[in-house]
Length: 331
Ligand code: TYM
Image (tube, rainbow, N blue to C red; front, side, top):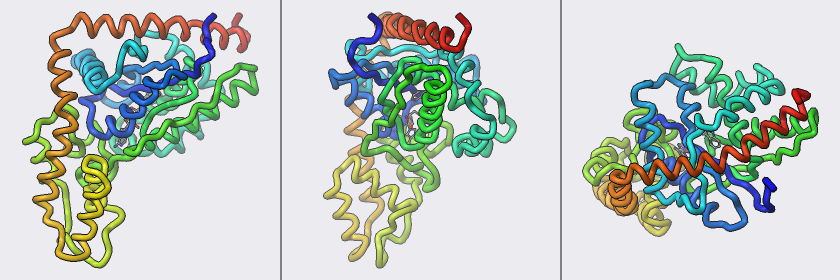
């Protein structure tokens, strides 16, 4: 009996660098909420195969992967409630993605905003792996027949592709893939500290890491662009709006409203705002950092978590691939 009556959840993060508060607010918070919900069987992976879709350093891949596992556990993913595993250890992810790619057109992939953004960032790297990114992601999700996917808003176009693939596979081959939906959190889009675009691991200066200390957070926020601090209307986009969003997420809506009043009257003093905000962010991260330090000395435990996660994932993945091969006429 492979599928109990629980719905499934699947999510993952690439091993491209230390996790930041965008990853935390946009994805990890939702991942934690769903692992606590007994209606779901939950799978969270380290998407190391997705890491090679943009230029990467092969010598530090294993280290970066370990960092994601530690960040996951420190931030509150609980291995007794969620299966935590490494994507490349379950070869069915890559295998299924190839089968799924037969129902996707090249034109559809070329038009995705995420693909266009990445080739702008890395013009020399318009590879097949990058083009296939969403198909591999669909494979990650469909392999576990997941209904819910806790990810940030930026991943919505990829989920749309996953739904299209599920529909086509079901139509053409009679599979029973559910159409996955994004599980949203309040911080589904955290902007870059630089005032333009989203906070991203691969854009230097754009992010605050979960491991940053108070001084680092203060320095990073000090560089965030602002304006004169007052005016006739509070900006609802751009650098000031971005700062106020972080205020709302880390200090609450009341504090944000207070600054909005200040903007329309005496003016915001940005040094004070940034100081208070840095302190609030640090207070939220401190318990995560303490837990991480503790985990760093427990290498065997961390290893056993991903071994157990892979064991559970492999059973389901093997079953789905067998079923797909059968329906597609291989068996
Ligand atoms: P990655 O590593 O780029 O991002 C990991 C997660 O963090 C979210 N995120 C953000 N949320 C809010 N504001 C931001 N500035 C911000 N930056 C990142 C992302 O939305 C994501 O949830 N494609 C995935 C990895 C993946 C995956 C999957 C996810 C591979 N296969 C299957 C779910 C299901 C990604 O973007 O990773």
